[in-house]
Amino acid sequence: MITPLTPLDWKRRAVKYYPNKIAVIDEEKEFTYKQFAERTDLLSKALYQAGIRQGDHVAVMLPNTHYMLECFYGIAQIGAVMVPLNYRISADDMAYIINHSDAKILIVDEEFTPPIEKIVDRLNVEQIIVVAVDGFETNLKAIYYEDFINHASHVELPQIQIEENDLLTINYTSGTTSRPKGVMLTHRNNYLNAADFLYHLHVHHDDVYLHTLPMFHANGWGGVWAITAAGATHVCLRKVDPPVILDLFEKKNITLLCAAPIVINMIMNHPKVKETNVTTKPRMATAGAPPAAAIIKKAQQLLNLEIIHVYGLTETTPFILYCEWKEEYQGLSEDEQANLKARQGIEMAFNGETKVVRPNGEEVEWNGKELGEIVTRGNVVMKGYYKDPEKTKEAIVDGWFHTGDLAVVHPDGYIEIRDRSKDIIISGGENISSTEVEGVLYKHPAILECAVIAVPDEKWGEVPKAIVVLHESAEVTEKEIIDYCRDNMAHFKAPKSVEFVEALPKTATGKIQKFRLREKYWQGVKRVN
Image 1 (cartoon, rainbow, N blue to C red):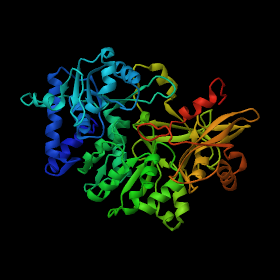
Image 2: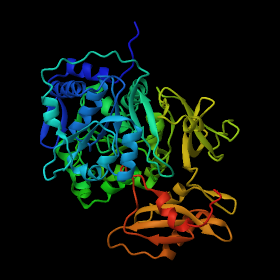
Image 3: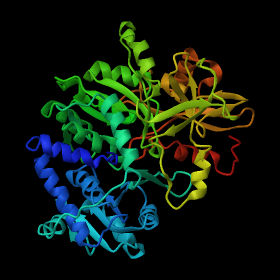
Image 4: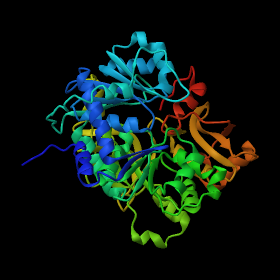
């Protein structure tokens, strides 16, 4: 007998075996798996009572709270499709996504209602549901979440037959160069990605998982499902705040979390880190940008974090690679270990096939030198872009999804990204990896954060420029930074100029938005690359 692959089945299992175990901790609130299931069932009943049927879409704009977790299960188990929204995008993009996704209902956190108030007259939704938040109030004509679900307590939970290739979520890309695209992810996609999360991040029943990563971002990389599958505990985090995170490490004995490298850097550079007593050896998965070896080393030294480098994209649900750690690496120096952990690694067990190819589709040599594009196919690749068959055809060619990431393959088969195709710097015909230069910069004791971009140059076409945030009270000159780079890498790769800034522009998941840094330098100039 074949049953559809859906992560919803893990909620059933958790309630069956761990009904009284704490499933969710959200500040002062705690819910057992039985209580969590009861709340998600109430949400399902309320949505059904409101007219939501199998295949309908529900948009959700919430931070990492128990309400957001409830939506992932409550919407999906009646066969509806959840559209998680990034609450940091512009009001105009919010309007576009909500309407483009054909959402019938919008569930929104009260703190995030101001931009919705500006665009409400442009929205095609039939109903708005607001999660009440102390200290905030809204002028929206809406029903509050608790009232909405409690009015459905007498309704029978509808029994829906879900197929594994049905849509589970539509996750919109950031739309940095064009309108955001809706990535269609199925129950099967999410199930197998979460299986990779379970296996490769070594999730077990006694884990206490901190939701540092926004749940709206590729469904929390699958953590919203995988932690429930193991019957482990979800710890919610409304916003990324280093002292709060460090406090939770101590008070809740956090054993697992996920975050972009920039978030690791924020935590490691907060003064409280030196006072934090971590009794567990937490595992931390990182992705979103290649982590500098210096950041990995600092995380291991200060908090005893076991860094697990993973790689993927929203279009791949998102995991496709991880840096598998071998016993033979244990005898290497800290610097050597950190350099190895900075690689993206090898295929995960359940996602399918991933390789690095030349423009003609042939695989590059495994020599750690030849540059190619990462392509993938298999169980976690999206169904396509919602209502955009042309973009789908551009991204998936001959059955392979093209990532746009440029990488090399080492002799042991480990893939290492050199850059995004749009971020690679081509100076005088030479390819310069911005991430390689950043890796050197992060070793400088005065530098807190950095980004390297291409800027126009009359002689070379374009050259690298470093945008740098210094540690508080640190002092260093542009010349000293350039000289430092020239002393530690090939001269042609070193930045030709340095700009000091207070902060770098970032996405909600902590990725540095290099396109925004490039804008002022390339206005009116056509970039060949």
